Image (cartoon, rainbow, N blue to C red):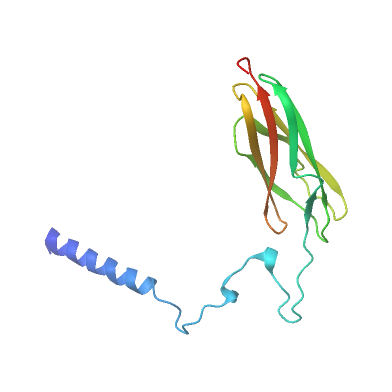
Length: 158
């Protein structure tokens, strides 16, 4: 078999695999039983949902007001687990490198308990109106909560 025939054979084999892999299940039905997301799992026999955590922030928007350029401002976003299962924060990230999530709980928060996320904003090089977002990913529903920090940074030219 020369290289041309080998190439044609490989192309034909690839085409057959691709067309067979893209076909729907033999029954023709797609059901929710194919989805396995534990956070939304239900007891199939009774239809009852499992106890879930719920994250409730005191404020999701903090306005720092007017600050002088070059200053660093630290703020906290207090929250509570208002659900019925332990709450776990998987990640806290920000929309900009000038805003950093300094401190957030790395252990589960029991139902009824609270904690806080500490965020630091560096105003250097950020004159004008600023709106920064903090993304909190947890095992609650919805899985991502967006917090917002605003500030009016006054620089030398204003």
